[in-house]
Length: 407
Image (cartoon, rainbow, N blue to C red; front, top):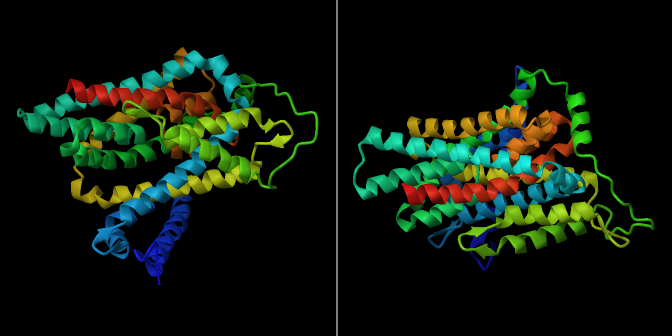
């Protein structure tokens, strides 16, 4: 039996689903392994997906190829984007009730911190481009463009920024698109793991009292909401209606392009869910999903996103991996992390959870936010992520394009 007009067999689709669930099962078990109080958590799913991509991508590709056409990349992109929609929409709803009040109080801090993180990453990339050109002795135009494309791709991966990746591919042109993709794949691994570990290590290094930090976070983002006086009407008992409505609107908003920039599906869904979460009802009709629904969608979305991205990244990881490229990615991840944290702590004087939430937003790190919420023990950490994310989203796209123009 076949599906999609005879393109793929049910056996092929079943194999894909089996792979997804197997990766999730092994990944969650792997992520639960604790070393000195530090664990990968959901990011363990990404590691297992990456390993699967390294060794079994060809097997999956053989299953999802029909009539000489491979549908593997498209299938994985659907899984990745579905995960992003679920995760980011959940984050928007969770952050929505406190977001606008928090943003109003700390707007300058979030803008400045987002710029510090992205600009420091861009400067690190520029220095790595100069260093790589000297090490290789590149002089001709093609070699110089190759190096720039590779390093800008590494920057996008180090900051786990899909919009920067997309904009960079468009800016370098068709001849160097694949080089950008390779750089992104090489740096993405540490880009994910580095920030996930960072938000766990920092509270231990500063001996943070998480109960006290949660109180400080609540005090910093205190908001008063006018509750609807009458009886609230739910369209469905779980709140799936407002969730899918916000996601639909968000996907629509994210599809618009302004030059080479767009909010993308991620930014559009985050924005629409924030607005839904802020108002919470239209007249008597509730537009806020249940808390349990949001937690499940957030975790499921994160797992799907990591599986789709991990398998794709693993496919070319071994073939194109070079230690020096990986080192460049580590630099471009760690430098913005450290500078951003120190700036937020000693200059902006943000409380720890607002600091780390802003860092995950500035690094556009979806997996790290999931880890931070687990470490913090409160969903309120998502508000700082949501506030800093748009600044970082715009800045990293602009910085990537500037690097391509300059170099």
